[in-house]
Length: 254
Image (cartoon, rainbow, N blue to C red):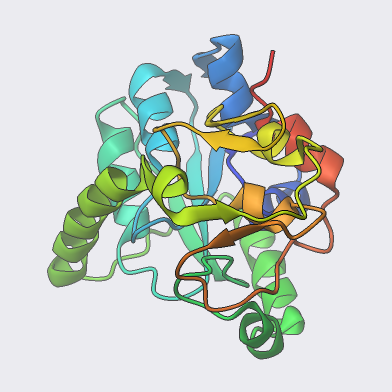
């Protein structure tokens, strides 16, 4: 079994690891130019971005060829998921992927313009998260057939909001992130960026193809990076995932 994943601050990577399979980072597959895979089961684990999936995931799937008897998709989310999984189904169908199983897992949300991290950590039960992960793992091992459905109105809303999110995200870092004087040029932000949108000489400089994953902000050791509209100065990294794992998954620096 193979799992293809994308992660900003570790939630989706943690879920992928817990399910257990050969893990393939989508950013690294893009970097290596690997687009053809075959296995008896193939899955995708990704975070909900703008009621759908990040553009780099959809772009990768559109270019790829996957062959399997069983496909599954798991979406992690923190607020409202709407029809993010249906968005994945529509994109994947164009590449010949027809899912047997989809599910979603409510976890701590890292999107600082919308959520206070302190409240997210306090209000999201780690026991409930673990319980849902265990159930998802059992379902996949049993090759369960189940597709999440939210209705036509939700499908339309997700599709509409996703298009807006794609347009906003590409310049998100360039327009929204401020770097204060505590920055020491350590380059962690550059190394955790999944789309090579950051270059560091003395301080970070941002380009125009951001995915708004906020990995750079949450992983900054000096807490030197801030959004103009952030609701919290607190930061979140999944406690089960190490920085090296995020760098290995996302780093595009050659």
